[in-house]
Amino acid sequence: MNTPLLERITFNPKQCGGKPCIRSMRIRVTDVIELLAAGLTPDQIVTEELPDLELEDVTACLLYAAAKRNHPVLQAA
Image (cartoon, rainbow, N blue to C red; front, side, top):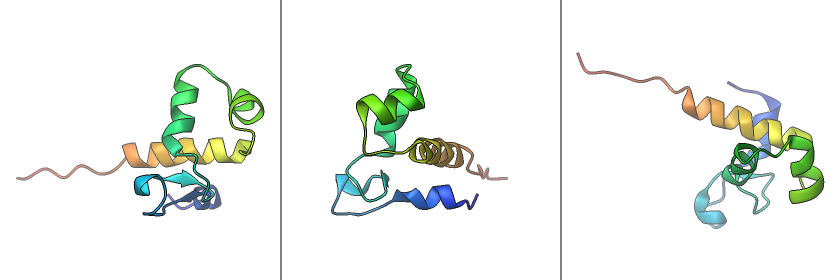
């Protein structure tokens, strides 16, 4: 899946242990996913919890997580 939204997800081995972050900030994709799992809405995340984010960042996190979970599984014959 190649979408411009996924370009918001960045990797830097010197930042957050190389974990995927949002737009080179020290906000990890997992931080956003955990907030969503805790019941916060995307609007709450960007207005109350992580005001440096944009709604598109939250969508990018979801797309990234979905792409990672949907990887092909190879089985030995």
